Image (cartoon, rainbow, N blue to C red; front, side, top):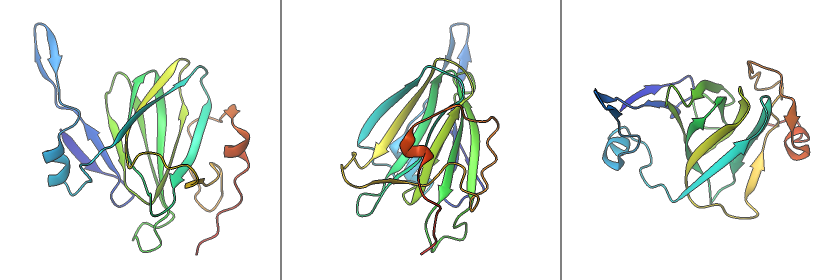
Length: 177
């Protein structure tokens, strides 16, 4: 696997390195030892999928509050997304910065999002499915979020979202602690 740092500290683009032959290819998408060697959390506790029927569906920007902060490894298994992480860690050198990447079923890239970052995406194709590996498991009552278009972050979304939940649309302006 190739690990490429992004503009946000600890957020990594993870790309498989396919071994090809006449049958096609084989590639690892997860290896506890390789993630640990990169200084990334190698303990993933839960897997989830998100199916999104329409292009322009926005989900995010979500995170889980301490003491249950989440690490996510996000991959698009059908369709395409623009995936975003926003740094909400006040002591981070990239506090309030964002990083985004296009993840598609074809490019097979994943985005690693560390604890303390909000995560969200907009779908770039109809029928998009997103696969998450997460640690720790979801804890009711600790979910939180920031608004996808909050000017304090200035996220440059590649398309205007068309399908947004009330919760995601109505998060208040972010206030730094």
